[in-house]
Length: 250
Image (cartoon, rainbow, N blue to C red; front, side, top):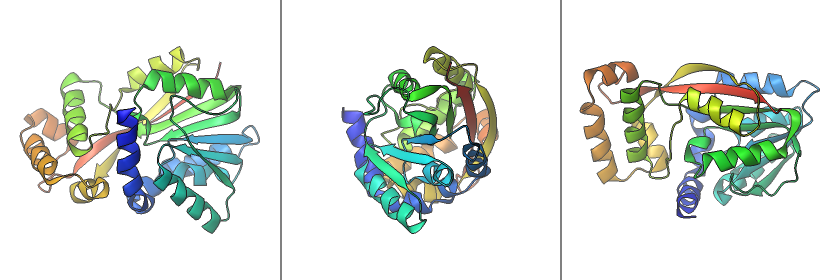
C-alpha cells in the first residue's frame, strides 16, 4: 500500500523529533488518559498508530500495553523510551487496517494524532472494534476538521501541502458516525485548540522547500474568514482544532 509505505518512511526518519515535540509529548489529554487507564476496568490497552508512544506511556503505568505502528523507527523509539521509563510495553508493526490481534484482545484502544494518516479509516475502525472487548472503550485524540465547509477545505489543503501522507482531518460529526458504524456506542467528545508553530511544524516532518513555498502561499492567500478562524499569525503559526472522542464497544 503506497500511502502506508509513505507514512512509514516519513515518520520513521522523524521519530526522534516526535518524541521531543511539545505538541505530542505534553497536554492535559495525556493526564486525562492516564486517569482513565488507572481504573481497574482496563487491564489491557492498545495504542494504535502509536508514533513516538506518548499515549502508550500514559496508560502503561496502569495496565498491560501494546504499541502498534507501521514505522520501525517509531517502534524503536518506543522500545528504548519505555525501558528508560521502566514501563513494560510490547511493540508490534502492523497497519491499522489489518491488526494481528485476536478478537476481544483489549479493554482500552487509544489512538492519538495518528488516524488522519490511515488509508482506510472505516476498515481501521472495524479492526479496532474487533480487537476491543464488549464494554471496552475506544478513545480518539486527533486533529479534526471544522464542520464549516470553507474551514474544512482550508485545513485539508494546508495539512496535505505540509505532509504528503496526510489523508484527512475528520469532522467530529464524521467520527461519531464512523465509530457507530464500526460497532461502538454513542460517542462523547470535546474540543480545544492547539497552537502550531509553523517553523517547527514543517521542520519536524522535513517538508520540502517547494511544498513550504506552496504552503506559505496557501496560508497567506486564505480568505479573511479562514485566517481569523485559524488565527494565522505573521509568522504563519496557527490554531488547530483537536478533539477527544470516546465511545464504548457495544
